[in-house]
Length: 332
Ligand code: SAM
Ligand code: SF4
Image (cartoon, rainbow, N blue to C red):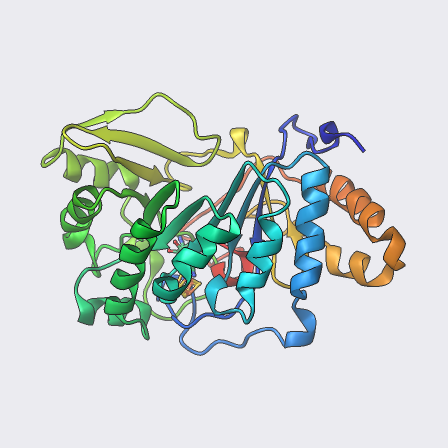
């Protein structure tokens, strides 16, 4: 099958897969999860071998970017083994999104396995507030993880931050300064209405990327970088610093026209759009096909699934969430 098969009905070439390796997490971030979560029974979660097969087939269809995410990917047992296998598949860009809690011990082995880039979530530099936002997280272990990542030799280490008006808006400048002073990029993500949460009203906490940029412009000299990463983030250069500040704005800047990605959830559903329910069951394909036909059956399922990719997402903070999946189930 040729790489050109990974084109959706709107002519978008899909070459980027985000693979969720678990829906579980050691944190319970307020915007991501409810405090009391029910996770998937283990039998429904793909095995590490099944995940490797999915990545290998995606690669054979022309995919060249793979990001491992979750839940918290680094709490999955034997996850290093998975990375070692993924590292052999020849992806031009193999990356990871993590909350950083286990990076202090895993950063070096991950680089050795062939992981190129890492994104680490960080929403506060105050230990108590960090604990409050994540409900269970320990800031010290995350800061140690960030440090280890910097030493380990990734091509790029980036911070991801969700700003909520009444939780951490006052840390916009300190978090940005922390990133820039430590040689890190930082992206601010607008909170998305994924899953029903009880912690806060998303509408009350929403701060648009434009507002964040205006705030930051009073402290830093920002210049838009005229380059598309092929992804949803738009980047600004900061005078006097080598690193960039990015904004991911699913509400205020619709990026669907250039969407180049699909997601596979931990239970093996291929999700064609973060903001829509369109999906197909790759686990059933994998588990029902005879061993020697798994790859071809999966390749066909990928190509068929792409036909379901919707044109765009529609997020509305004033309505009850349309998407009942939490972000941890989707794979962020
Ligand atoms: N556990 C890892 C982490 O926190 O980086 C990876 C998975 S997490 C779901 C991926 C990213 O999604 C994180 O940067 C997190 O801040 C972000 N995220 C989670 N829920 C979100 C939501 N409702 N809106 C916007 N971003 C969200
Ligand atoms: Fe866990 Fe990441 Fe969700 Fe926080 S954002 S609860 S760290 S999956």
